[in-house]
Image 1 (cartoon, one colour):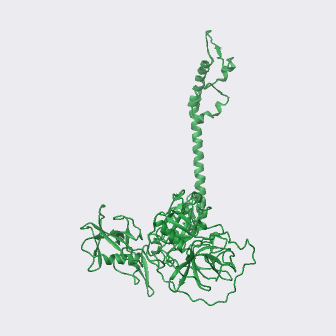
Image 2: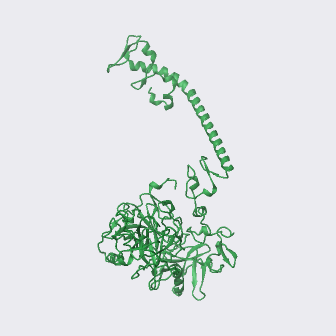
Image 3: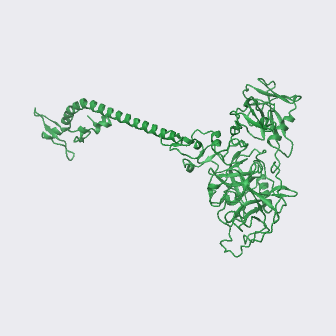
Length: 626
């Protein structure tokens, strides 16, 4: 009988010690003791039988094995049963110990007013639930977290800015019940239930319960529950808590409906909006919205007579912010010239920290709606501004050869980096065009980014106005905006909310950066330091207010020595110098001209997930405790 037929656990039983397998059989020690010989050197061993005949030793061994396994058949069940009972007892004891430890851990957690982890190996404070930092070995404190929970942990609830796509972080405020909208008039709070939102009747003095009640969808009868802010698509209105398609007909005039929607979502526009009636080809929704152009009211019914939909294309928005920012009065200051000629050659070169707001303030939401964040491999990288729905303006050093292998995305409409606001859009960067004369000294630090998917231009995502003739003068104050670090050298001090800082323009850059040209650079900063752009602000806008041009982008954050150091201004690529290259490059692209563009990695090589900024997270950031 072959040993391999026995259960694995039987092979190691004590009574088999000393039994060596020979040709797949177990030899019997008694056979060898009775004078039986074993085969050696490949010879066949024989044993003399009582009747004088001979047979092979293997046959005798097999006969003896029958006796051995007769004993095994009787012994194995009792031994196996004994071991099974012992294992069961140990398993029961392990469970009892684990349960006792879990109860002990739970008891300790309760004493400290903490929540036990799912694996009972620790606990965490309730305020640490869904805060983005892992406290438990099994990460149970960061699992199954809704946007509402994350914003609650981050202290972003009820701050008048929607950080969640369903607006849940701005519901249930001021003592109202969950999902109720609160609005105030003369110190009196009104709680508007969800069913009364977008019902065509204003319950709030500021009409906030009747805002963003229409959307344009790329799909007919879209069933998505979330607000989309496209500038083109089939018109849908929210009624009874659901998005319902507008049932159109040939007799009704929809011009006012289209204008109201585009005014609210897109704002100031270049030309007239376009509308068309399109046959409905899908499966019918249960309810439709109808518009009466005489009473200017909407109603809901279960039928759509002519089965037509209203397709709307809002005109392209004008450039610049829709929020008018007033010029603040500045004191006239006598400032001495900054002279760095006495510094060494090495110190006269730009600091290689590259990405570069210190001493600033939080910007108002939607003031700099053309500013974007550039995400590299799932992490915030640089800033930029929107030129068109497909092109972003930034600096070349953010896309140097060192970074070029990364996966880049642009986050537009972003006010907070740690937000899932309905105003935000994400698009992958497919190509970069660096200025042909960009070099390691960061001269000609300008670049254009091509987006794989065009942005939907609207009130929250709109193109920037580039300076045409504006040349900021000494003592003019311009504003820098971005999400960069607020303390030099501390990358963890990057701001979550967009920051802005006002900086005075210097008359020349030559004193600060010998060898650089004032034609291509603007320098700005305080003699005493304290306020400046910093790491992460590179590529962002320097905005200046001109008498005839209004607020325009006059510069692009480029480089500086450290951040906000005394007598160390920041430098900005001058827009008026590079404007012709920007426009000529975009013009050649429109004419399908060949350009020295670099194709970037557009496929996510990590994990696709709903990040606050971007959608692609590299594998090295998975399970990194952040």
